[in-house]
Image 1 (cartoon, rainbow, N blue to C red):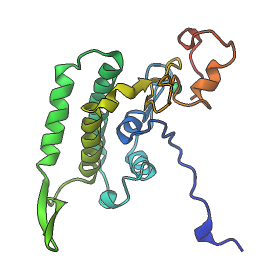
Image 2 (image 1 turned 90 degrees about the vertical axis):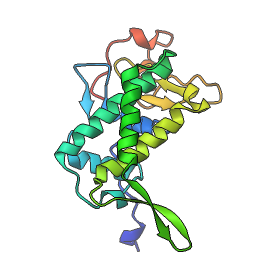
Image 3 (image 1 turned 30 degrees about the vertical axis):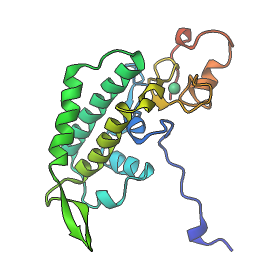
Length: 206
Ligand SMILES: [Zn+2]
């Protein structure tokens, strides 16, 4: 007999191909490099709550409902991280504004963390009034900072699919992963064989 508890969880509607939570966060813009097909997967607070659950950052930090105004901060953080990842990918120094913005966000939200007694030791807690989205953002931004300042930053790549713009950590042994996904951009590039992906027509309906 099929027990409800044994049912498979519904497949996430988010394609988590980044291999790192901060990269998956940036990838919540679909077709980033194609203004006509560009899509924001965090268009609503519900989208954000779903994404947080999909990447395993919730539901605990999301117990308080997030507000529409919180999304503005979330989207700003996303663009700051994209600018920093794009610089690493392009082997160019990051723009000062993005570095300042990341430091500021980490400092502002980090100031809301505090150590509290826990048993014989301590644990990190959040001051009253800290927003649920801030707690999630702090995790994403901290992990992004760790990634950007580590050797693994050299493995951040951007999908070669036209207009795609998704970023990912290249864990392929060859270190030459080109596509966000073989099912998606990789598959679209296949017909035509040797034609470079960058010359192919824009991807459709991603
Ligand atoms: Zn792609």
